[in-house]
Image (cartoon, rainbow, N blue to C red; front, side, top):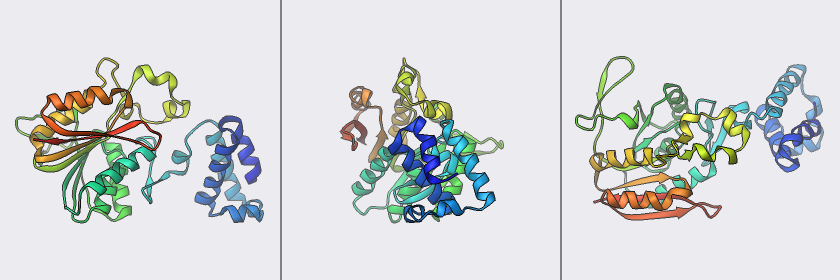
Length: 291
């Protein structure tokens, strides 16, 4: 299979422009061939084993599996992160959230908690880009935490990963039980808590692309229609105790609920509440300060 044959096959599902981009990424990441190499016809010189692998990749892509899962990696804030179907694929909007946090720290060395870390992209990026930051990251999924730990190792940063369900934190003692039967005391003095929690309501499924619905973990995507602020409320409630005075909450948000979320944070006595648009002009981020 050649580059032209691959993108023509994929164009049936993705359209010409996206199909060409996916094909180029496949050849570059998996076989080390640049666009110049493709123009020189080096895609016709793959070994028999490489051709077999390419056919398998083409089959998975033609069935709608995201290229990031097929190749097992994604670029995020200039770094390569391992991903699989136990974690969400990091997206450009989340990169913007990370940049906002980095730009706002003002040279300080904050104690950061990332809730719902998934691949670890937020926690690891902040640990790498904020000198002296002490970063802790939670996720309910043991499988996701395995991916996050691998990414931290590859990036050569230190992040403390813990398996925690934010909806079931015993706020009175801040002592959690681990799956191995042991217990660990949670830190309660963070200067910054960030979360990109599940925020898509079930009623929004119809507008979503099939490859997202069929492959990305639903527990990291969806929230009940009757309680779209479920995870934000839990994080903000925890922040009332766990944040230092004047500490910050940062969230990635569903633009549909930016107003109700800001109102909820205000009612919980957070102040300096600010929303921020993403590159597409949608209200995608919000921050608030603890009194």
